Amino acid sequence: MFEKEYDVIVVGGGHAGAEAAAAAANMGSKTLLVTMNLQTIGQMSCNPAMGGIAKGQIVREIDALGGYSGIVTDKSAIQFKMLNKSKGPAMWSPRAQNDRMRFAEEWRLMLENTPNCDFYQEMVNGLLVENAKVCGVRTSLGIEVRGRAVVLTNGTFLNGLIHIGEKQFGGGRAGEKAATGITEQLLEFGFESGRMKTGTPPRVDGRSLDYSKMILQPGDENPEKFSYTSTRSLESQRDCHMTHTSQLVHDLLKEGFDRSPMFNGRIKSIGPRYCPSIEDKINRFADKDRHQLFVEPEGWNTVEVYVNGFSTSLPEDVQFKALRSVVGFEHVKFFRPGYAIEYDYFPPTQLKHTLETKLVENLYFAGQINGTTGYEEAASQGLMAGVNAHLKLNEKEEFILKRDEAYIGVLIDDLITKGTEEPYRMFTSRAEYRTLLRQDNADLRLTPKGYEIGLAGKERLRRMKEKQQKSDAFIRFFQKTSVLPEDINPILESVDSALVKQSDKMVKAFSRPKVTMKHMLQLSSVATFVKENELDREVLEQTEVQVKYSGYIAKEKNNADKLHRLEDVKIPEGFDYSKLKSLSYEAREKLNAIRPVTIAQASRISGVSPSDISVLLVFMGR
Image 1 (tube, helix red, strand yellow):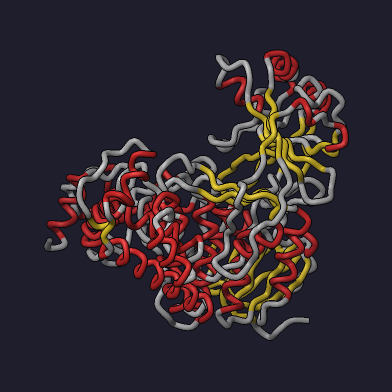
Image 2 (cartoon, one colour; image 1 turned 135 degrees about the horizontal axis):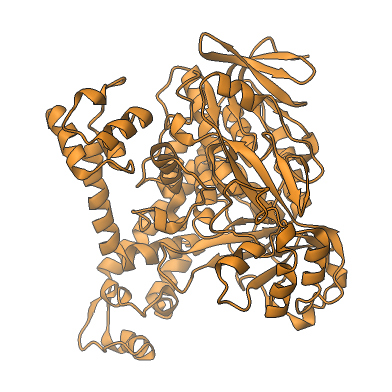
């Protein structure tokens, strides 16, 4: 039935598993994707959207490296928005609403058209391990499949338990059974595990809603896209809507609190802090008499609607009664109620930066098994696990992104170094170098790296270089070209900026806070340069950011370079911290548990103080 031995076996077909399989296969590894249901590859288990604050940057980074998430998102998008445009470019974050069915279909088709990628539908309930090295998987039918590396991307399926009010039943998500056997085996190997919780809101019939009572939430007038490839921007879009809960809604929900698994002790695990259930919001923010609800269509043609902001595990009758008291939902019909789900995860401090486990060689973890939440976080881990599995099998250097190179680098370093006791979600505030890690320059940062490891193709590299060259040329144009007062002053006057009395370089006027590219294009020489050089929106945006934020970018780059000096100070493998009595007891305990690779990583461990780092530097001869 199978190859004699696969290079990489990926367990799970969600966002992490799909990217892991695509990466390993595209780099040349014979890959097998084993999943419990081939019809749900790339399934959007929760909201039908990709991107958002910091998450949009991650999707663009995946695309820049040669992953599929950005392409799939563009092909199945029904609405696009660039969030945070009122703030600086480091905060701009792309987000797309997607057609849930088309999204999964596009993933399936792209994987089927990927050479070296085989598929098999069944539950994996065990690993084949010899001499602390993984060598395959065992399925529920008892079939053993040999593989040189295994990537586990089990999502919420490991001993998954679904809660709706006082009812609970096993399941990985609604309508699908839980996965068993793997957790128990990993515990026997010495792994530590924990439990986490997440939830999802009711899905309702859009025909039963009164949108005239809600606030319209259209997409951008000129929508962009995620992928740096030739995918198309949207020509038409579907609207979303917004409404609010009320004190009446809150009172009706409170009537069911005594039957809520969150409050009666049935759920003991921790849920996502930044995506709380509606009952959690009412409880934690008792001073607020209303909360926003976003009404999101599930696709181009379906009438199914996702009620974003109403995640709940309350009894279905309570959910229904309360939702019918929301403006616009007076006659709502349910497709299915919301629910909470508990599942096993493994604290990610048990992993290396490559996402390979420390206890079992060639075994990789990616996605919610590592304690993260979100499609984008999962997909990025899957890609990195697939890449590193292939590289190790081919005795090539590991691929690790630094904190100043990608949000993906921040995500993995946070997980490996600090661990997480609650579902981890990426935010721009987690990145100390976010001015460098913008969504507009992900290709410039990462496509050369993706090409070097054999994941990004020549066409991607050519596009990136062309963008870089055109942007550099446009910046030089602004730096060298002078502008007369009579030409620039009308623009400066229109934005209440001080007028100039003599000719000066364009870059000075362009650098002023209120002057934008749109203003500069009013100058005939600028408009002519753009037309003659066929500069597109991406080049214009890149040029504007580089001109207006050059000082901030240079300062951040300098700070990152200083940090790299500590990254270069390697800690010997197997180093015994207990012999350094000058270290605090907590530092010795944490360092021995996490086993940092560099001094810089050691400095980011919670409980390791600057004085502890000084002790390590002295010992290392620095």
